[in-house]
Length: 471
Image 1 (cartoon, one colour):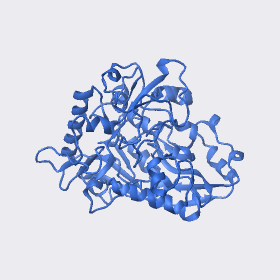
Image 2 (cartoon, rainbow, N blue to C red):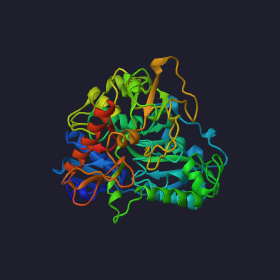
Image 3 (spheres, rainbow, N blue to C red):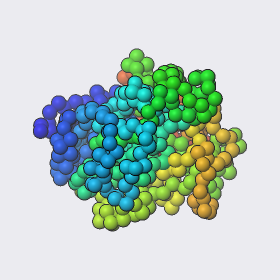
Image 4 (cartoon, rainbow, N blue to C red):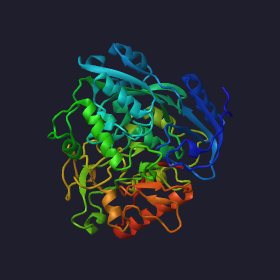
């Protein structure tokens, strides 16, 4: 294993096409080599960036003074016997939450994919095999391993809807374990995997995904269409089904219209997709009273903090190990923020309300790359969930989600906006994407992001939270 081989610039590995030199780069098609490299970095107290497709990362012009590891494994198999999954489950991080093989439906197809597989390649494969469940997630950039980290979703579907579990390297335990769906605490563009990164304050979280198991359905018809724009494009009613190939083609066309299908000739795709998540604020926040009545908002369950989730799900592990020796840096917020400060920055809420892990039951309003990007179908008043009522025992259990796109547009930042003499700009197709218009530096993209955040803060007193990992 040559950890010093193939040194590259991050600009070659990230869709923003910015970023300086990598000091140590390693790529492998072998699971044992990958986990050994991670373990070596942790023992050596070297900052670690485990990189997928680079579509959710904003590097620095100065490069990364640590180790960058990339998973090049690309196997996809169909598991014919659900009992075979129990081999993985024996090493579960939380045995009480193991899936039951008998719960796998007779018409189900269990698809196991390496984390290094490109996500859209997996969707294309599933559609070609007549496996439904992820066709609405066509065209999302990145790898299979990154998909559950932020619970990718679009056009009424999320990976959390179909995932059985995943195999991961636990950097605290220094072993491979299995996380079942319940272990991952999926929420709006969030999971325990993502929250562990923020809590640890580094570019990479506690768990490194090695492989993902999905339960799809053997059908040439799609899952019920759950998004009005997609239904209109297909010429069907909401809740109806359509041929898998037709759904995939329609989704790809819709995404192209928003600059969300990677295209070297289209600078709107030189981005990390939507740059900001939708803010979640406490239901009793004075911010809500100051917003115009037409500002889209909807009710969600109060998210839990990383500490709350870990204490409830894995108490013995949480009490014994709260971090990883030697990890440093920052991600998802200002440089140097870690612990509760990093969590507060990541979620846009104070630690007392522990936001950022919204209920998965929520309306899907104008989604494209896994994040809400417009407001055409969003409600204009506080409403209940589209997937089920929020189970709120009291007001303290309720939060309100706002539309980041609406806030940006109404703070005076239009599509195509750019700071003077900057190579970075807001997408010409939708305001949530920040783009490299050609020749931009990472610093210029960060400056544009800071400007957008400041405009929304000054106009509405709402703090926008970046979605990409900011190195």
